[in-house]
Image (cartoon, rainbow, N blue to C red; front, side, top):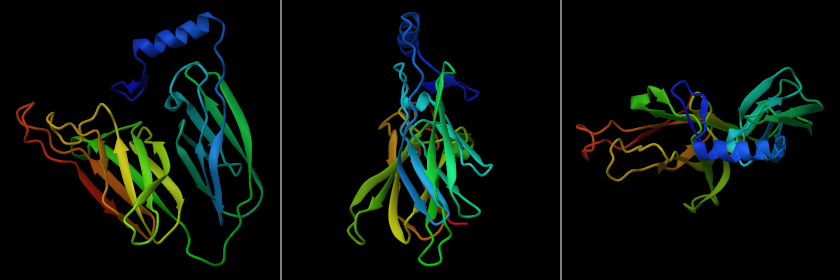
Length: 243
């Protein structure tokens, strides 16, 4: 699956053929709504969508809507991380809805009880942005991995979360313990972040990020080679900013 010029989902003939076979056989099923990794830290609630499509399409083909129960709504794709900070504490029923490409849907309620905290360091968020063409073109549906140092000073990192960038080419991971060191890796099979054909690099990883407050890490494709297919393209740039 990829995207058209206007960002709409595009499915190749193989996927469409599989889906059509299921539909003609009368076996097209609604998706299964599921989640994992539910955490509540003070007023911040976060979970990872674990829904699945039941008609042979990838998880990222699902459209996810999260109604947090306080009038706020978040949207994304299957497999993404969803986070929300409530204005006040209380008990809320979060409505988690997933819809497939055939507009079949399924929902579930998630009970959460955020509460204001009085001690400790507030968690932080890390927003990841992915761009091509010098920061002009956003790259949606890029797979993003978040890794955390397993022990302070160990320089060893383990994956803790993953998700996909939205239509604006970004994803936010919330409820992250600070201070701590993190790394971010992004993968897009159709993209050469190097900016040239030689040595195609579809997976790139940031250097360690010493996270102490809400921050943003931006991955930008390097300048393309001139002429095409030359090897003088520039490497990707990775910048970290803290508002």
